[in-house]
Image (cartoon, rainbow, N blue to C red; front, side):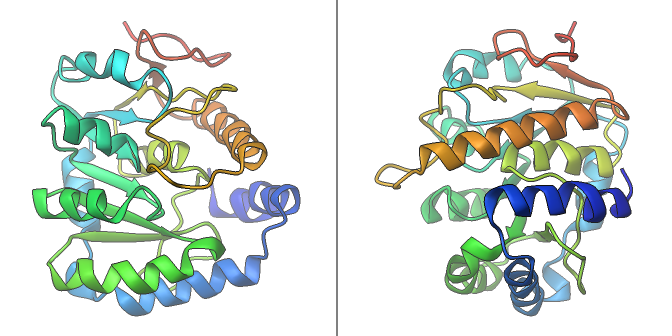
Length: 245
């Protein structure tokens, strides 16, 4: 995908459907750019890690607990967790190589990932400005390696690798970093919302969440047109995408 396709087709469609103000997204991107210093940027490190390798992109869907043991059996793979999915890794004493997050998966979890060596792909949007202000300075101070992203026009150090939900954005990120293959794990874009999707006590707007999941599924289908994408057996099927061998 080219940036023009995202900005002229996908992003306007998403903002209309979910009533998102692009100006507020842009403000969030400016803030994130301001808070993340150049020395914290880990873009080259992520590219070197991913290029030419298989990425297991782990979502927080209902199948996660069931299929997680299969992830460690994927040869020479880079583990890329979508936000709350990292909690299942923590519970299994596993450390993701990369965490893709918009900072609503739980502060302690994000800080644990950073401390454990995970690269943090931190996304800015209109709804997480407060969380960016509160958490990002702490992460920077503790030496976190960060890649800041946006869903609107790139600004400064903040990049747009496409994607909307943490899960499909993680898959697009792997593609943009040169992954040879993307294995989707527990990316269950159905009517059930996984227990790892949000931390306990988080008030979830179910209707809005399901709309986001549908958008995420469409973006995964779009990704499959230009990348080698397959679904790990045991995860929910997506029309047009094959199971991994």
